[in-house]
Image (cartoon, rainbow, N blue to C red; front, top):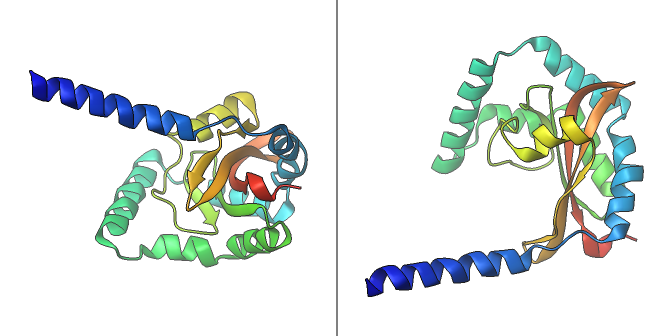
Length: 183
């Protein structure tokens, strides 16, 4: 019984310490998300890449198979060819130019309408974002601003915005924002 009590207490400490690290994003990040970052979701290069990927017509079964292979390669410490391609395609090059112009951006990854990655600036843990709140909620609510969390010694908020062609929602863009570098 003492072992169970110890484990429950340890779990409480771990969960409590994780909660303490997360905090609401400051207003300057919310304002940035609703202005400048939301506009990135209408960027012609990004919209074109998302529309092209959506037009490929991958099925959910194909997306989930890619996701499994992506995760397995990451666990094995190997490069999954599609991930490399998505970090080097024209859209990814454009994302890197956006990052260079905005020092507060730490990463960007873009998804298609089913949640599969289209382009990205850094490796992601998985290919399919469609099962995650940052994807689902953007389709329901629009712009999302995540809580500030510590990542690699930085205070990061993940901002998710819709990728739109006019009023048509065609994908999502997820942007890591270093809150300490937002003007």
